[in-house]
Image 1 (cartoon, helix red, strand yellow):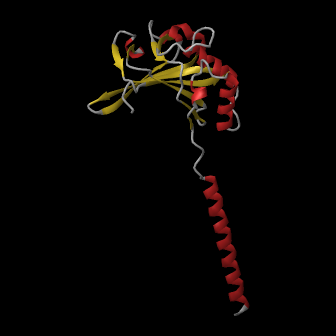
Image 2 (image 1 turned 120 degrees about the vertical axis):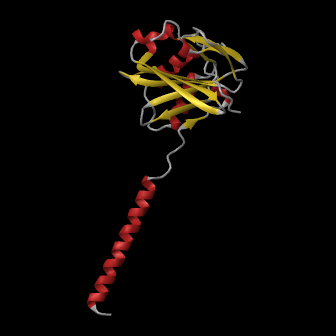
Image 3 (image 1 turned 60 degrees about the vertical axis):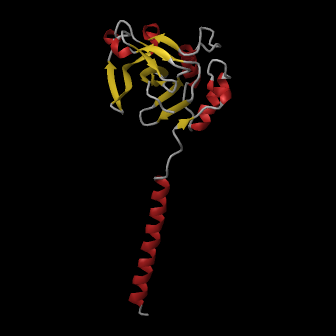
Length: 212
């Protein structure tokens, strides 16, 4: 084997090794991220009665580095879901949004999901300031959360409250004037984003379509 051929062969092997290493690195870089959704264990799903610190630790372990101000987020969620003492599950109940004006981050989105001709239809309304909010707008939540989801790109933390039994609920999209039955499998998702270090309500998504 001539020196020139030997040199070319070594160069090709070096390039192949470099390519393989690059492919492996890219593969590691494109690895499927850990699941976004955190399904809470039974002892933590009732946010009114669960140990608050244990709930925060569970969230922090799932998403690293830990999300900031989780204690404030937990208290805000408990205020929506529980009574003033924060220790009683009120069941599936209506929450008037106007009572929480100081806890809203604008723009606030209201996303309604309904079945139309066998298909889900999503309607999104965006409120850019308190002046745009209807005089009466409310939503339904319970004391239990079955899933917490974090969108790292949007820096948004969502909590999904499943409906407990069939109820009649008003929707914010029509200013509370249209009542309709909530499926036993329906739920409401509250979306939170930070502003000046504080978590504030940035979106509401009631979904009354069956999912089980």
